[in-house]
Length: 479
Image (cartoon, rainbow, N blue to C red; front, top):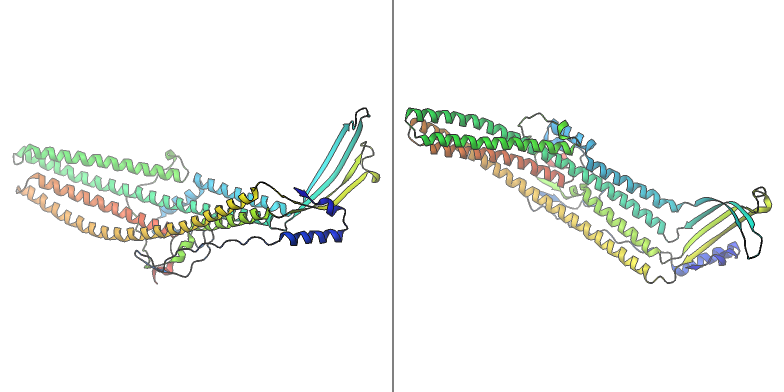
């Protein structure tokens, strides 16, 4: 380090200030320009299902425009209650909130060097200065203050970086909250679907039991072979196994919801309803600006800002550090006479220091900071592209599932008619029981597929709501 404090200490104040100004002009005071946020590849129109309105893209804020209760679109009071419980009790969300508080504390720490540092020092020594001399006592008490003048923006850059990191942590918290809300909704839909499957299998078992009784009676009457009774029994027991599996699936989803809301499964229970909520209508036009609501995109933007600020901090290391320091106190050989006017000592003056050779450490730090800027910029662009992909996937999946559900409803209706015909023909003795067995199996499979498609439709809309950062404005439904 090159210390210039003596030059300034022994110069008159006006000359010292002129010398400081001269050094400023020699090294240059301009901070390096910061790189702009990379352009977001927002399309003029969505490829799948909905039109896009371009031209609204701008820098996002954490949770900007997010509908905090977007799940209420499903109109399910139980789901609303579960979401409230998850916000209060989910451990993962509490961890993200703690990380945010740590980032906010780091901002306060980064701001500290902007203010003067004040300290108190006291010492008591007994020492021999030279061989053969008598030991002497030394007592001192004093205050000292120092302040680094932030000429080159090093401290300000550190504050900017800490603030951007804290904003990114805030966006991360919003992203964790949004993911939790979507997961709670999807788990709830899966639980209700399992209940619907269980209810369907319960009614089917009752019908199969009637078929068992019918076949047994026909076998005893000698109008049907014994194999009919065996086939009816096999079908009943196989369906009963599916019914038990649906019960276990429902229990597992209830346990998952308990964990999401921060409860032990033993202390958590939901009353069964077997009713799946209706998915909300998806608007025909979705503005591209809705992606700005996504907190992961906001977090990526703030990480770019933090990396840019750190690049400025790395550049400032090439400039000299100017520190203003002052101290005042007392020094004496005994405590009794320590605090007295003759023992008062003080010092005041600036100090400027500049590293002349560091083996390339500062250059390497700048190169590393530039690499971090490029990394953050690429991450931001990747986040936007991923968001666009996820929205397109959700749109195409939702449209496809809607068509599949309509086709499956027609298939179930046809299977019901075919089963009724086969059952009447068997009772009339015109067909074998295998025809009834096949028709029953086809009907049950179609009904179970329809329930699964309804669950997938709910999940698809839920995924679209999540991928858009919490939904769409109400006027989009009528535009």
